Image 1 (cartoon, rainbow, N blue to C red):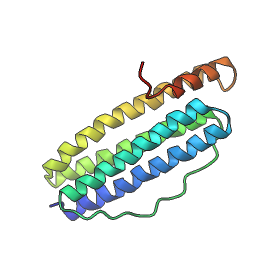
Image 2 (tube, rainbow, N blue to C red):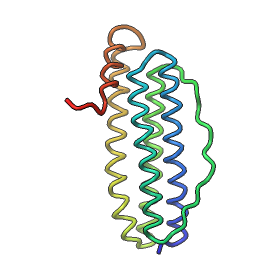
Image 3 (cartoon, rainbow, N blue to C red):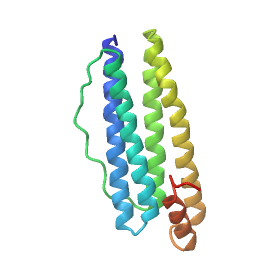
Image 4 (cartoon, rainbow, N blue to C red):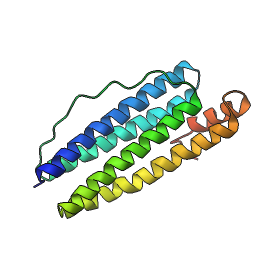
Length: 165
């Protein structure tokens, strides 16, 4: 059975993961409005991934005999200055999520909740990948610039995310 401290932290994380999903969907809509379908594709896949993360926490709480408590999801921004600023926001958001998961891990250590510690290892590894991916795209955008062939090539590259090959 989950103790209240861990259960509350995990429920809060569910909300953060659903917000992440909502945020990436909003970013995808912005990218589509700017005729960047590859960026939109990448962000929509990210949206689905974040939704899946929320459901992992949901399942875990239930498996441990806890109570899932879903809170309101705040409205994400809908306007972004540029593709570069958008991916800076992605990176900043992933760092925020990483910090949140690390805080839950620290609580699990304090509470000697070993199953939660083990479960969180997957998320910690996932966040390393998430931050690295966002950072790589941001670095490429900074080199490519906001307009021209390099941006279009990056858009095409992001559009291939998740495809075999």
